[in-house]
Length: 116
Image (tube, rainbow, N blue to C red; front, side, top):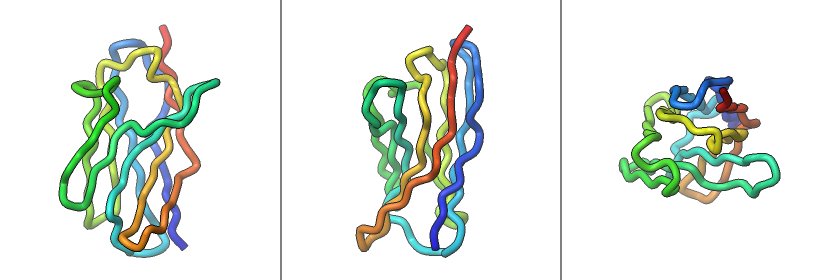
């Protein structure tokens, strides 16, 4: 059974940086894409960044130029480098992965708090 395990969340001051990691364990399956979503208090979950197996990336407008998604396909691991963090980036960040057959997996989430 596939499990996605996130790490790297925490508290940081505005302008700071954090790096999130998400490792898939339990089965060495191939993912069509891996990415990150987030859910802020009182808001719906939104896609933050996604990276396909072919290297295509997509970001929500609010993080473009500040966040970078990268992926190590051999390790089934995806990373999110978050720079110039803002209070509005405060949310629970969830790792997401989808296989070529359409199976979708979610991590349990990691909390990112940006506050002075």
